[in-house]
Length: 481
Ligand code: SF4
Ligand code: SF4
Image (cartoon, rainbow, N blue to C red; front, side):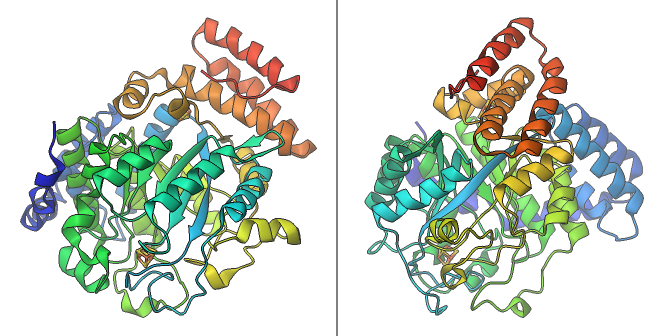
């Protein structure tokens, strides 16, 4: 078995290797035949290697090269459509504690930011979950700062148990992804035993000197321990892990190649790449000075990053959050995003407060990690997606059927998504519409179901789908493929 003790970040995130790959891209960026061949390869859904990614990033780096960028965007849309169809998986972040002993210079939770510190009691966790369930969410990302005294692993496990046990009418949390600091194999085993979905940890930046500068103290300042966290999570039995860079901390092409090396390492070592790649960009937050960050990525660069990653790792879920403005979010979803949050609150205890007040904004910015740019409610986000031709999905079937890790990838790669994800998306959307939607939402939902039902390719799945849909209409819940 793989020994995580031997995992060292320099074995897979090698600076010299990244520089070599970047030079290759620079040297071949004007080779249009090579670029065309890379795009043809991407079309086969077999993914791209780091050299090919580097060529594409350099070739469309020049702001004038709109034609090539458009070609890449078109291919990304095609790949997204082929693998994900029109589905977008919805989730909500749940911040349980903002105590943090780290000094990350870009984060509103950093020790010394002056933010009001708060940790939810289990009763408050339950209240937050009831509020999230009242919005129709079935999937949450549990988030916490790092503070072994105020927020240890047993507290996180307790919060997970409370979340899974809290119901609200037909509402329930069916999948909990967890985004907490790098920890030990023993602690990852505890998360696994508590029913974790995906363990998500952002690298922030792969560039070690920048990492060390931005993390001046605290456990997170150890680049090596942080970068090898996913290895330990895998060894602890968590086979769905999520990675991500915070774009804007360092030069974006370097970060994308770093991501490719990390993906390769996970694939080579465990036979499975990351379940998700998150694509956050640095945003304004309490106590954070954006002037300190000269590598902020433009909208055009951000779109290129998303599209190139979609070409490179076609089967991996890609996530954006409410950090992005609503119109821009709608635009980048088509380029490869498969999951998005809706109606998010980034403050600790904000959902229940918002429900009490009947408002849609996030009330408690004094405990928030970053400023939300898209302040629409979950219902507004989902309705806008429906109107734009997408199918908001509240599906959590794979995790609950034990289809994680390579079993999930098997499902994705054998193209069975149209007989599994699509019907599941429609069934969970029907549940959502009936339980939480207004008349317009219900109409949009059942119109889309009528037309998309034809895309289910297996006849027996269609028959079962109709049966499940009738049961949902009669008031029963939780049917899945
Ligand atoms: Fe703490 Fe995470 Fe924020 Fe760093 S990024 S200050 S570890 S909450
Ligand atoms: Fe995701 Fe599995 Fe549901 Fe498909 S069936 S949407 S892969 S959870």
